[in-house]
Amino acid sequence: MKNKFNFKIVGSGPTGLLLSIALSKFDCNIFLTDLLKKDSLIDKDKTYAITHSTRKILSKFRLWEKLEPFLFGFDTLSISDSVTSAFTNLATSDLDDDISSAENIGWVVKHSDLMKVFFQEIDNYENIFFMTPQKLLRRKILFDYQFFSTGANSLDKKFLDFVEIKKSYSQSCLTFKVSLRGHCEKRAYEIFRKEGPLALLPLEKNLYQVIWTSSTLKAIERLNSDKNFLMDNLSTILPDEFKLDQIIGEFNIFPVSLSLNLPVLNFKKLVFVGDAFHTFHPVGGQGLNTCWRDVNTIYDLFNKNTVITKTQLILFKFKYFSSRFLDIIVTIFITDSLISIFANRNVFLFPIRKFSFLLLNNFLFTRKLVLNQMTKSLIYSNIKYNS
Image 1: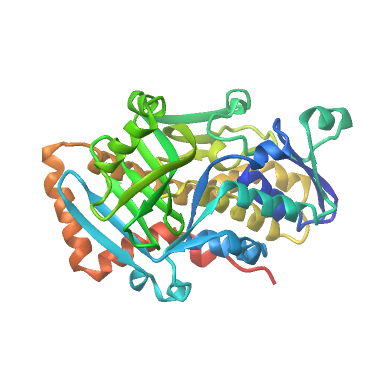
Image 2 (image 1 turned 120 degrees about the vertical axis):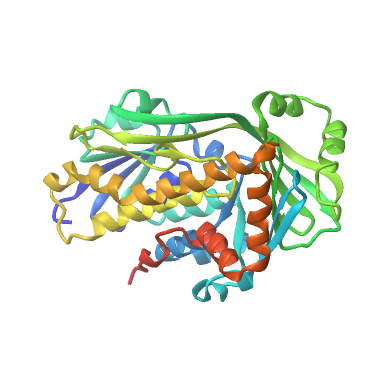
């Protein structure tokens, strides 16, 4: 870059932190801000699924090897339909040749471990400044561009001239950790049920993260119920090989929605990134991975030019949106279709559901198509490693 730009990133979750690290590679000042303090940002009982597209992005920014000690890989993915009793198991042998050497379908990481690694990384950069909004306001800095990674329920979306398209599923996800016995140690589970999918992500031996989707009312009832009652309820819907020992840690609940923010025809120099830009149903674990693909696109757009001018910054949000549109629309279509077809008891959809599993169980091409779209997305081959 010819000039030293000042970039402001509002929101210091996983997306905001990765974006600050990516943009720090350029000759610019990064001002990272959040209403929460660092300890509060780190100390959240959440878990993320990591795909191969994300592995490649993290490797690109030299973060994969730093995060790897905290990752737990899974080499089998069990998909089942509790209504029709159909099921299939996808394995690493179903992966494309260019990713099968990783010997995992995906990985799982705890939020706190991820955030600690990212905050340690930004401490290495002299051009990243993490501060409170009040302190940043007192600095009276003129920003050349602003990035909002303030989450799915961001209030900024109401005031910054973006058009939001939104679909509510009237569902919420209840998440918590459980200790289990009698299972395959490195296997993740996606169980389609009439009220919504139930995902089980392995965190370590005998420890799983439960992501339980249901109506918001039912999720709140479970949140407020006795732990023993909840364990009995969960035991009835887990695969037969599971023996539930205990519930561990905190309960969290979050609403499920589908949304997309479209830029209007003005030239304000700001964009939304991650969940503030788009949200999907959590089925398939695409949320954070798609957010980090936003970051990769932003980096690539800046990296295309040896010199970035203020005129180019004016058009940046339109280039960014057009570059991300196809990947986001495909992810919306896939996740929404899965819920529409598999999260109900509509008897007219039973033949489609059974036929889908028939294809998965009998045709390698179908297995590869499904698994590799989930873990590579459309942009895997376009992610270029930094020299």
